[in-house]
Structure formats: structure tokens, C-alpha cells
Length: 111
Length: 117
Image (cartoon, rainbow over all chains, first blue to last red):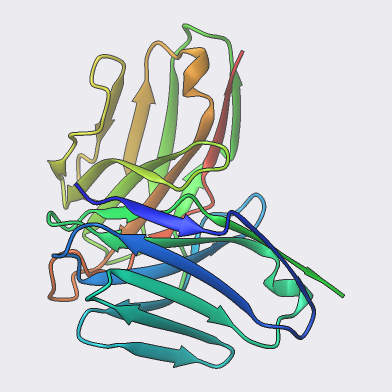
């Protein structure tokens, strides 16, 4: 089945700096890669997603890149702000269309 | 548009007691998911419904867990009897078919935090 690994587990950045989270997956048939942000006491919220026919997607300060050959994808947050502090999860669909999540990255943005 | 609604938000029970969680998906979303999220981990799928049919329940521990979505709208997840290891957050999500298998955007509810003493 699909195995998604996510790094780092924690990330501390200074406000205004960039943050990068990387994920790898194992199932070459995976074709959908969403990223979720989860704040304390809340459910995961989709922030951006990418499909396998696209290599990069950007939405304001957030961008995601996908390398299908290497089976890895990354989330980039530029000009980080304190409200970006949260746990971020990457995910990938397996051959059955089931979402497999990474273990999460705790991002802390310090003023 | 209202999001996914879950209740209760918190539940504390003693082991061996039953517990039930309720979920109302986003209006018009045919697909409903129940996930388990342990502390410090990502969500793990328990069961997926397409309308009222459970199409993937391979990860649902059927000896103690059950779920239903009788009219294809809201759903209930039950645990009977609860064990200490069941303490976790139970998340409900819903999605609307977008045309591609496994590419539907899933929208999550706030979850129910269960503590088993």
C-alpha cells in the first residue's frame, strides 16, 4: 500500500522567512496530493492540492511542487506570519483512491 | 455554506462503556469518511461511504466499531465497548465527486475528542 513520509517533524522559522516541508510517497499510481493545515482543536483544512499532471502550483504565499519521477512533493510557504503556526499534513492517494497522510509537521513562526 | 458538523466535540467515558459520534456532511456531498487521528499523527481512514453504501471499511475494527449512514446523509460511528486505546480524535469528512478516482477534495469537520478512562 501507499506509504507517505514527511519531514521535518518540527520546523521553527522567523517571521518573514520561508518554510519548506517535504514528503515522499511509494505508490507510483498516486495522482492526487493535498496539503492540510490543522490548528489546535480543529479539523484539518485544505490549503492547496496538486494533481499528477501538474508540476507546480501556487496560491499567494503557498506553493507546492511535485516530482513524480522521484516520488516526492513539497510545500513552500513564503513570508511566514505568526498565523501560519500550525501542524501541516501532506497526503497522497493510493491505488484505491484512499488518502494516506504523512505524520505531520509542527510549524512555529516566531515574531 | 455550512461545513461538516460533528457532535459531540468532546466525550469522556469509562472503559467498557459505549459511545457514539454523529456527523452531518456538507450539503450535496455524496461521500462521507470517518477517520481516526491519534496524538501526533495524521488521520487514518476507518470507513468511507458512497451515499448509504460502505465502500471501504477494511480498516474498521468490526469487533467493537460500527457505523451507519441510513439515508445517505448524516452518519453515526459507534464503539462498544470502548477500550483505553480508543482515546483519540474521530474526524468526519465529506466530498463531492470531481470526476477522478481518489482526487475528490475532502472537507473535514472539527472532530470529536474521545477520552477513555
